[in-house]
Length: 359
Image (tube, rainbow, N blue to C red; front, side):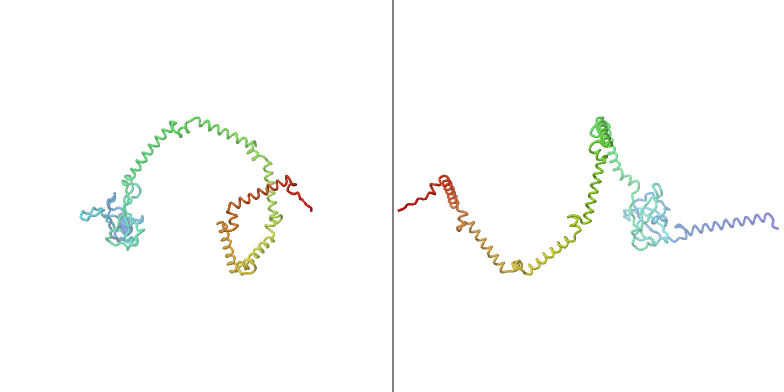
């Protein structure tokens, strides 16, 4: 039977073995997983910034928000490189994300929250180039930091301060009762007039509620409702008569004879126009006969020449129209004839006496 000392020694060896095995297993798991493990294959990429902006060695490198590597070196390049962005940042990135890393991917400095750590963010959303390889330089995109935002907002803050001061002066001016707005707010006369207007409006509402006045009767008089109901009934009866074809309007809407007559009249008119176009009948002959058209044209020409001669005063009609002597003689003849008739009426014996002489 083993002694107590041997049992304790056996238990100690088992415990040490379990601790050692657990430690080795944890180290292997740590080394073989993640982006910083020793067994993870990586490539080196570089980017150049004008300012590191709080970036430190060991800071994470993220692709679309996913950790893919770490920053391994940050340095300022020498003057002989003549770079506008002198800060060189070297990154180690896991190759398992290589399919999403392109040579034209863009890097930028980002901050985790307002006061979080600064890290490198790689954006491949618009990248279409080949896969990135070891030693490639990725383009950078400038992002404004807190200081840039503060400097840019100083002008806005100054304008806001001036606006607030101006508003404060306006409010003080209004509170003193000056100006139109100040009088509207602080003038008791306006309140009194408004109160009087509200009281009058309340009186009108009370009259409407009690059925007084024209509007009150419109709201509360049953006779108006009965008349309106009667009118609606008459309109319904009229519509029913129209639908039934009663009356003149009903016949116009429902009687097919009107449609037939109209259709027949249109057909007759069409037949008449077809006959005229075909040269049938008197109208067709007049419309299609070229000889008649020439004669009509010749007649119109002669009438036009005749009217021109009359306008120029030629011939008897022309002289009668344009010669004032003809008008004067005619007028004189009419005057003498009227005087003769008047004289005959006054002394008919003088002009109507017949003298007979016998041998």
